[in-house]
Amino acid sequence: MAADSLIPLPKSVNVSLKAPLNIGELPAQKVRRSKRRPYVFNLMVAGDSGLGKSTFINTLFNAPLRENPGAKHLASVQTVDIQPTTYELFEENVTLHLTVVDTPGFGDTLNRDADFNPIAQYIDAQYDKYLKAERSDEKRGNILDSRIHALLYFLPPTGNGLRDLDIEFLSRFCTKVNIIPVIGKGDGLSPEESAMYKKAILKDLARNDIRTYPTHHAEDRDHLAKFEKFIPFSVVGSDDYIVKNGVKVRARVYRWGAVEVENEQHCDFVHLREMLIRTNMQDLIDTTHLVHYSLYRSGKMGGESSSNGRPASVLACDDDMYDNQMQNAKKVAMDEMKMKEEQMRQNFISRVRDKEAELRAREEALNAKRKQMMDEIDAMRRQLEM
Ligand code: GTP
Image 1: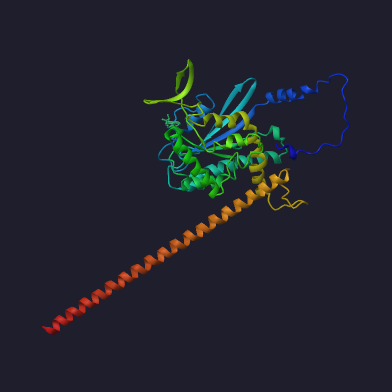
Image 2: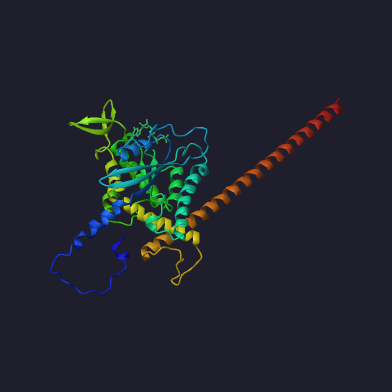
């Protein structure tokens, strides 16, 4: 959390110690205490089928977490499945409870509601669970946190900027969760194509006011500059290895050579992994709690105002964060208004179309009647002439 959001300490008197007290051990005590409790991280992946999401998860955590990639969804199912799976990863006395939430079926139909609603409902249901636990006076550390801390949205390696589906999805979800757009199967683009594609995506994100992580939401700004230049991360995943200079490395092998997953000349995988796991995992969790969940919570409890005019339910946060939350709330309201406007426009268009079709049918009926009358008159004229 930003240091300036901490409560200021009372005035104190400097004391120089005559003998060591071992205060320096405090951080280590904290680390030992936090190591006893497992860390929880919940990651959702979404994007078209076959973009390498499962393979990427295996590559990211360096373990065969997702089996049978490509065989998760029945083609006959008409909505997105939500498939959470929890894994327990253990390293250097730290346990990570990792939940990967897959969303097979995304983009398989042309129905946006069928694509988006199950995902939105799942995310909200986890916020609701957390809210219920908070209301029952459970301490934050004891609440089982199933909220989505990061959503990796896979873009196809087309090189053509964002599609309508991408814009709608990202616009709707960027105020709900930390959304990180990534280009799947990055080896499908040459470095020049990739650079141009990234530019086009960034332009589309800005044009549509889509706020992605880390640029817009990260609480911890320390690593921002380092990662921003790779956004949107272009990734390559693989379950296969090659041996290079006597070392086994993950790679995709082609007739013309190999694309190495961890080679930063080949793709941005190492940078995304570093951000997700090494530097920003805790920040993703904090941002989820302080920004997205807080916004959800204030929306749920909205109305009640405290003495400073803020909704009483907004969690304690500094002014910047409060402004951010309010901006987000405004954006959500604007989005809803835009959606309603669009619905009204569609209704109007379809009513005009119906009316046009009705008028056309009447005109055709009149024409037919007129033709019939003309034929009758012709016949009568011919009879008279005879
Ligand atoms: P669904 O299971 O349909 O949701 O697909 P998915 O997005 O999980 O993709 P999956 O990981 O199942 O990979 C689909 C196919 O793409 C497999 O044959 C993978 O070997 C291949 N694949 C995965 N990652 C990459 C990549 O980075 N580049 C290329 N060229 N192929 C990849």
